[in-house]
Length: 238
Image 1 (cartoon, one colour):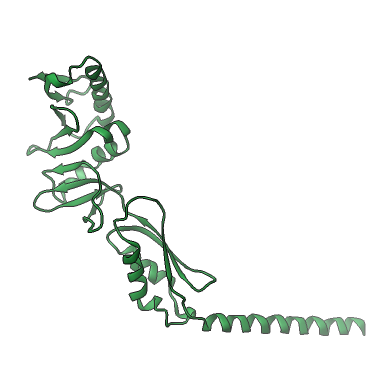
Image 2 (cartoon, one colour):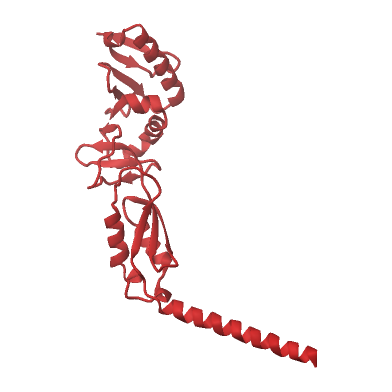
């Protein structure tokens, strides 16, 4: 008799749990979205603003606040944000308070092509349009278009990841023969880099030359510094 009573209690308990779960699910599905919030993954200047991301979330019919939460397709919302030219990655989720939250990573430019058309080269080696909100402080790139700029990516990326080069190099110029010249922020000479080969060796030689010439106070005596010979630096005086 006791075992039968225990079985009945167990069945009733299961029924109660199922009822409460169903009730909670129904209430949750009937809840409406209660606004949006946007968070960026870093503290850099914004190439895409919070308002712009919010506008995308609000305008998207999948994230309309008048829809119930059960109708929301987070994958579609993420696809919408990731299609934006300034966004590298976006993760969207629904918070317990009913707000639709987006965590956004911006694309990061490492060089800016200027000329007939202007655009950025980003850290992943892809062409990126200019932003209406902020202009990145990156080396200017002359003589480039959206096709040949990709060949310069190893050079530009190396400069971006080296604190010394990032501080000093202001311009990367693609010559008609496909070679490259560099200009520095506080130097009156041009650096002839040549082809995008032996990048680390060339720049190590250049940094050693620069530091010695700076120490000897001879930086102003040169008009051209040639790195194309690999293991040596050839200088032309003014």
